[in-house]
Length: 293
Image (cartoon, rainbow, N blue to C red; front, side, top):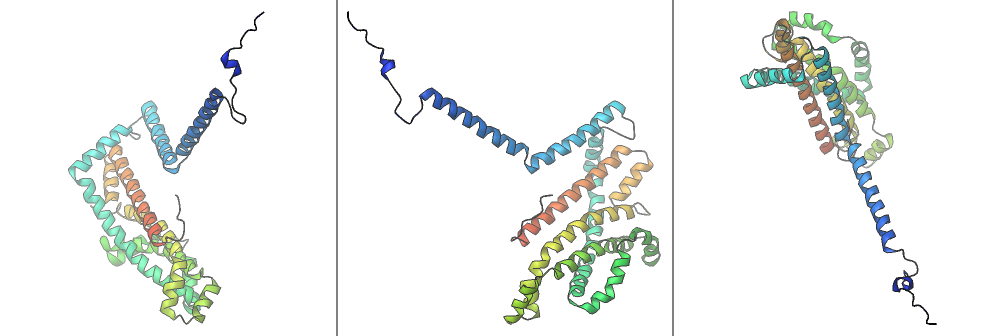
């Protein structure tokens, strides 16, 4: 009886140490799907995406409330957007924003120069530290807006009093951060610089400033939103210019959509200003990782 010949596929075996082709394909496909899943998870959990999702959630909740229980006090996003575009096309929004920013940054610049200089001097001189310490400790927690009527009496109800109020409010956070930065120098680094013949200027430039700059930029980040808040509040009183004036005027006519549009503009200005400070910090303080907020 003739022997039956086995099929050719039965005699074919995969080389030792290898897997069949179909199993290799399944494994490769599973690995590709896992890699794609990791990439997708990384994108969803990245900072920009999470920030965008958070903003979308807030705006969505506002729109849902306005749709279900909307009144004139809580207009929908489309109404606020229409008011924003109207003021933007009229040029009114840009004009008042320029007034707020010009006076606000003037006060911030004065405060930065004075508070920064005094903070560095106080950190390096125990005499100045002893003289300014009680003033800073006493004045920091005091609500400086309570002094605004006194500043109005001294400087009048104009741009000067508003700039002075901003400078006063921003003085303390800038002073404290500059003081802390100048005191944060490692004693060994200062001792080493002095023993290599470094003078006062070289010590300041090569040792003190690199140590203090992260603190200085943190103080500036704190001061910028304070500047916007204080300038806006001072414009509520006896002014015909600025974003604060626009909010007060819109509220007096119960035009809440325009008021919210101006508030959103202030938020956008604050966000952009903060991003500029963070970007500048990353360029100047390039040796230290910046904040991700």
